[in-house]
Every structure is written in structure tokens, then in C-alpha cells.
Image (cartoon, rainbow, N blue to C red; front, side):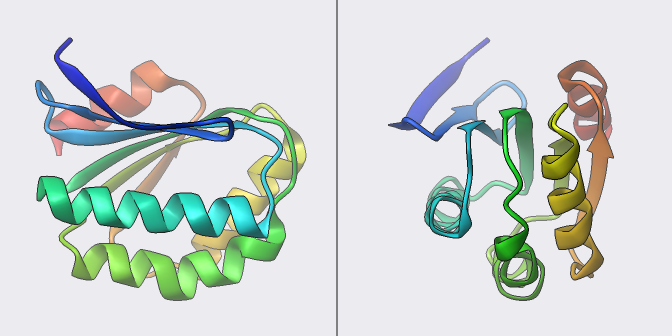
Length: 131
């Protein structure tokens, strides 16, 4: 797989997958309002820089609730991502129940782009490839 690492931080790794032409975001550990907002802003910058339309957002290693960022994510960040060119967003749920609730809460505030949720990376990747 031809990927380029764009960002490596303790709570987030972002890479660009040239084969599939999407950003891959791997969120790690406990997340809070600050880590989510900073990571999302970085994703937005890379989306614009790479001129891509798809994101594979992996929360499978997230270990906490981050619901305080949900409204901001749905009402501010997702519209900015759509404006930046994002069309399809595949979101892999965390196995952590509270993180899953945070995801669903954010998506309740989201009207675009097209976001689909998945329990595993394989299914999420397959869906994103078809889009």
C-alpha cells in the first residue's frame, strides 16, 4: 500500500493513501475537546492540501468519551470539511461504548458530507472504495 505519513502525534496519526486517494486518520487513546478539535483542524488542512474527497476515520483505538466536541464537530467542522472538498467519510467505531455514543452524537448534528459508520476497518474501506 502506497501511503505517506502526514502527522504523527500521541493521540492521532494521519496518512494519505495514494492507492485509494483518501486520508486515513487513526485516533489513539483518550480524546477530549482539545485533542478532537486540534486533530480535526489538522485533518481539514491535509484534506485541502491533498485535494481529496474521502476520509477513512478510524476510532478503533479510542478509549474514552469525547462528547463535549460533538456539537462543534457536527455544526462547524463537518461543514468546513464539505466546503474543503470532502464527499465521503467512513467512520470506524471504537469498541468503547462511550466513544460510540460520542460519535453518534456528533453525527446527529451533521448534515453533509455523506458519513457512514462501521464496526471494522475492512468493511469501512470496502464501502469507501465503492464511493
